[in-house]
Image (cartoon, rainbow, N blue to C red):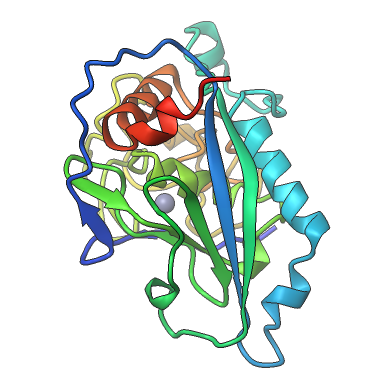
Length: 257
Ligand SMILES: [Zn+2]
């Protein structure tokens, strides 16, 4: 199971300032996220609208829903997090709103027109690297995530990782972009993720536990790269729920049953 490293970039791709000062506090409700999936064809070789079937889409949505309700397999989880009761339950629900098939390839995913990015998670699936155009940080709202079609519905948890960025999480090594370039401890601005230098399993040998597990305390975290990533911490859950309320308030308020 191979997956590409993901990038976070933040230029003109993020809408500025969607903050709503509502005074609303989190009541723990299920946050319901409508998903718009864009399937982008790139020639005959990468006929993504044909390759990504209804069944693959259903599988990916099922994985997202399992992961974001902490119902997924956590049998590989390191005891450090279990014994400290740090496993978070995000309580998010994703449902398919629309699938849009694009016959003409755009060299950059940002050229694909998004559908109401304030209200929907737009996932652009094509012959692209995995990336989130910035994380939901102060003043910036990513309008989409982009996924290489080989990592969509493949069980690699790549989409969960990118949605984590879309919802406001940094990598567990605390910086934007590639982990290869960084060799110093930096915070991810979440209190209960241990500090970690760089990402796990950068050579992508896909062993679980990874060969560098002893020096990578967050190897189980969805915001790392290892093949046994399986959970968000309580601190990460608090972060993403707060950010949805603050920056995507319409999604939160629409989530009432
Ligand atoms: Zn990432």
